[in-house]
Length: 285
Image (cartoon, rainbow, N blue to C red):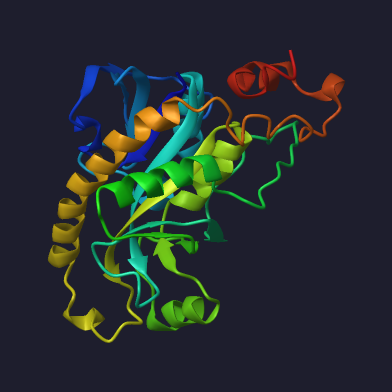
């Protein structure tokens, strides 16, 4: 069985049926992850969960140590990640309380380090299709089986945050044909691909972004209420999806680095090879 990682908000590791939950602290060359990792099994499938913002929501989207989070997942043997995220909607048809499984991302962040390959090693991974279809299909299928309102496809624009959009920004993204807006998933997807971990997003729509005429009547309290309700639905989706993902024999990102490392092997610093061993160890010793 493949090991399945889940990144999301606090509480998702309490999915009914996960057994043998343990807290695992992981040290990384990039510093501390957002929190400890929670490991367990669901119907025989190994599961690793990480609360993206830490328990109690302590870490801002711009302050998340994305490299440490994904490195920790890799070190714990994760081959596939389902990222559960709250998003705003840029399309009328993606309504609050709906789920969306997007296919594409657009990066509008400014301050984040989104590669493991720095300081003496360079790699260029293919990223035309950032979402792994085999995982997205399963997540979407699970939501459909549960008769939830779910949409397949669309583009998630990753803004910097932590502030929400201005109306000018929101309308600009709509004019570009964007569908969803969030603050975290693009960076995760980039690093997951470099770590040869297949990645897909389960996006929970909490509100229309500020372009929508109804936006002024939306309060943070309402958004948090929608988010809380959708957590239970997200748990139900994960409970169905995780064992199916765990049974997959092939993952689309499993050889993403095979031809991507361009640095002369003899010139890569020894410490860098040691630090990146969980990621590059099958290619460079």
